[in-house]
Image: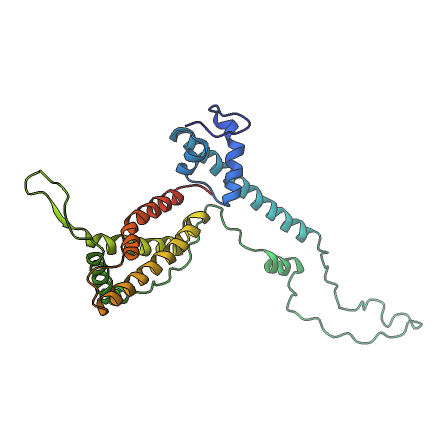
Length: 284
């Protein structure tokens, strides 16, 4: 397996040359990539991946400190630009009142309020200063209680019995039965192959449904899981309908086309399961 082409070459590169590509990956993910993702993306060992991750963490911490300092400087500059209001003494000048006959008497001024007015700078500081949290502080959202799932198990028990019985019965009508898996070795290992139908088809349908709704897989895997889960559930429903119609009609051996379709189900389940597992572990 060859290394991916990075910076125009496929040869192993030092950490300094891989750092720009790692920054680009962190920007695309909007978070720090894991060590395993770095090893898989750049085809590097654990030591280089750890060093890359350490460099990315240091750069993020340094950028957070710069942003905090910039915010403090902006706040300090906005406070410095505000005009400082100088309080004026409202007491009238009485040194010349009544001494000059040509000067008209000034009206009597009210006494000043003894309570000092708050400083405009202090008021502005109280309104505008906000707490700057440390970039290393981790704020975790409050955990919400999960809904209980045990009623689903209670609801699934009767459905499981009916589905199991329908698939086993249809398997009997289409030629599935007891087979010696180890002929010639003692008494062998005899198993009824009819049980492979409910185990394979319904288990794959439930698993593909979980993968589709989990939201933790690549888009291609989620899309494949969606359509294969819906198809598996539809095939399961058709199998139950076919079994009950054949039993109601008193048929002891299914028609050839039903036998052909049922016989191909284990192979189809194997192929879809292998494809889904591959897509789940592939990068977008």
